[in-house]
Image (cartoon, one colour):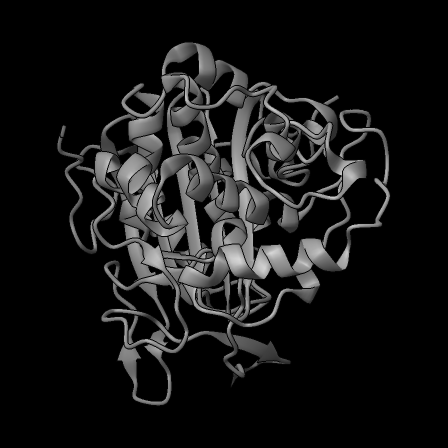
Length: 354
């Protein structure tokens, strides 16, 4: 695999103009909302421009955050899940127009026409049952989904499949069940086989809150200016938002995807073409600062995450161990600084251009 030249604590590469590293660092340390806690990585093509860690991985013990620490990425899991599904599509194991009911038994009759593509793009019309999924280990995804389907056999569809956009975690839980049904292994093994290992993501795995996972940062929330511990619970997020990762691993994922090492150009183009809700297949696609911005945000108890990829190859990754951190807005502010935009151009950060 092509090396990315990742260096712990790296600032902007030699020769970068205008002291951007200091500007970025100052922005992260002196914001009105308080100092940032987490990891920021900014790259362009195969060059890491900025990589720094801030705050504490464990505030009680005074352990400083480091670039190699692992944080919950929440719904930033979704593009990874979507990529695994598209690899199976490219191989001919699945089709985008395959009805989910062909591969998952016990789907309510009203949902039978829902396709794989409609799950990927949040246009399924299936009620979002995510909030009622019980705490259960990673290997229980199938049993958890089966039980939920059995409780909702008489449910109707919210809208005709394909006609509306409605973001749904349950869509992506179903896609995880589909990975198991088609991939002939547990969803986490299929994800590792299809995406994590090919992309070189050695520090990404399911965020099992009960296991001891080396290098995992603790999560927090803000109460005014004070950080507070969060009450850990099993999020049962699976393929919708359950992964633990690092900024470096997410850059490896983005680079492998962009370079065509995971899916071919045709499927990548389809994945990154915006549809209803500005959403493609696992990504939101908008125009920001005159460029296309392929991005996803994640949030899970104690953590917030964002990855944005711009047309010129600029990638901004923000991982925070503070759950209410406005990571999308922060990532856009950092992109504006890297692109040397005037302050007036930064105000509408991440608002879609129409």
